[in-house]
Length: 271
Image 1 (cartoon, one colour):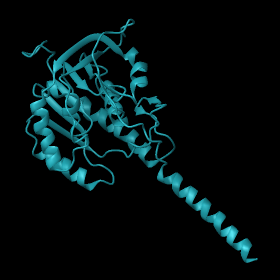
Image 2 (tube, rainbow, N blue to C red):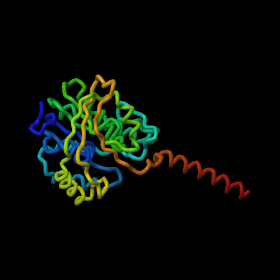
Image 3 (cartoon, rainbow, N blue to C red):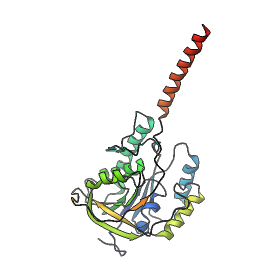
């Protein structure tokens, strides 16, 4: 079914973090039956956490649904030159608490989204490459797909990509179908909600960001388009990805090993 604005009826937008809904889905935000935000608290960042709570309590659209899980601290752990997809999103290197939290968040998201998405006809969510490169965006896509697996709903993903994720986007082509819609972004609404996030000190994107004139969405399909599809994508140039941050567990082990070596050196000098 098409809405009065000539795009499929938007049953729900499922976005990972507060501000993702205006960065990647502004063109359909006002029409959405539900705007579902998945994560709220940010490990080690009280200002963002408090600001997100304030922003969602002051949100101007009544259809907001805030699941409010705590983020897993995985943002700096991914090597975007070689990301490894997994059932839960991306593989998190090593055996770390952040990796376990990431896996647990996936299970919680699937359970919550099964209820929230029940009866939805069209769901708009993150792309399997995570737009500019975010493991929790990819996790939300996987959680939506798992939650909607037994339903007849259609899932659509936005055409945003960066220099860090272009290879993963190409590798994800087999999950996408031929159907594409292109719409003008709603820059006025996006700027209004961005101002709310900025006022509450939890805006996570570029301060001088200018929304593109339009954005495209492509349907996910179990029957991939063998010859691809023609669609316009918005390419975001970001700084070269930094090397993955070592986990705190590894850092502690290396520190202890260095200290033991130092103690042995000092003891041998004492003899």
